[in-house]
Image 1 (spheres, one colour):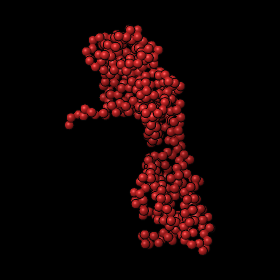
Image 2 (image 1 turned 90 degrees about the vertical axis):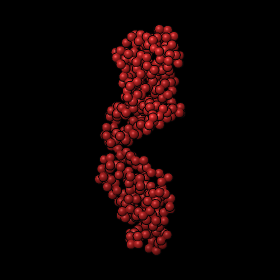
Image 3 (image 1 turned 60 degrees about the horizontal axis):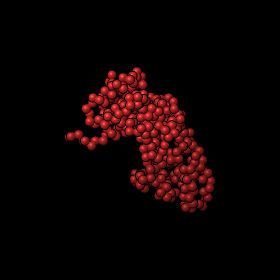
Image 4 (image 1 turned 90 degrees about the horizontal axis):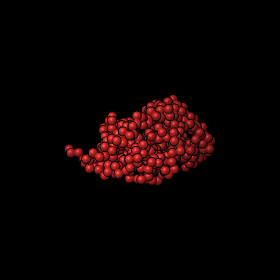
Length: 397
């Protein structure tokens, strides 16, 4: 099958790499310039700004095979120069620092290799680039090379003084690993770190989308630090983090059919809970079971802790049930018994007396575990739930 000439995979990876690399750049160098912010696709691929003024422009190049143009005549190099030369303020000697971030590696003796942060030889790099500009026959770079030579030699020298080549930069596949290493001291448990990074990248990608849509300004190290502190609290060793995507209302009808036979649904029917409330209860039950299972699978929850929580809910229910029974008159009719049962259901649903963990206080989870107790027929809401359940067991209805 012929290659697709319109395949945009490489370009898409390049944009994703640019976004993720910017996060790595923020983590690595942001603390050294907390008064500066980072921007995407504003002045350049990635830019550092102080107020409205760019202080560093970064062209980010991604080559999955680590091969790319860093020779003196390469298109990559000259098109990067063209981007900067197109704006006179970036050619000015007092202009921002200029960086070429590339996954490729500059060969020894090339101008790019001489513009690295260490072992720089700017004069030799200038000679090599001037020679390349004069001798190259590449039509794609002809206009840029001509514009380069039209600049005064001192302007070209000052320009290169602000250019740094950061070659052998991590590929998109390596960036996550380097961010993981850089943030090891924030969250270091492997299971928790996976969740922490998923959340971090999700947040950062939303920040990037806002920047690309130009609906937000730069983000600085202080703002990132605040978010990291929030994630550390959520995923640290003394927390119980959320780990599932909850099933929401749009699946309520499908789940109702799936769970209609469950004992807790039958018990809700005993007290004439409205259909909508039953659907919501089913969602809570389903999500709570899924969350408990996922915590256990990830070894984030000691099941003894879960059993203690469940027992605490059961004890609270037992006392609340006895209080309700004290209000059931000897001559109370069925409607009154159902009314008292519904009141008990909503009272327990709204209770905040117990939580599985101090860091996890989702209402749906408490309700879902309460419904597990009802599903086990250990507890009920209707004053006569035990005899009613016996009738269900006998008739199968």
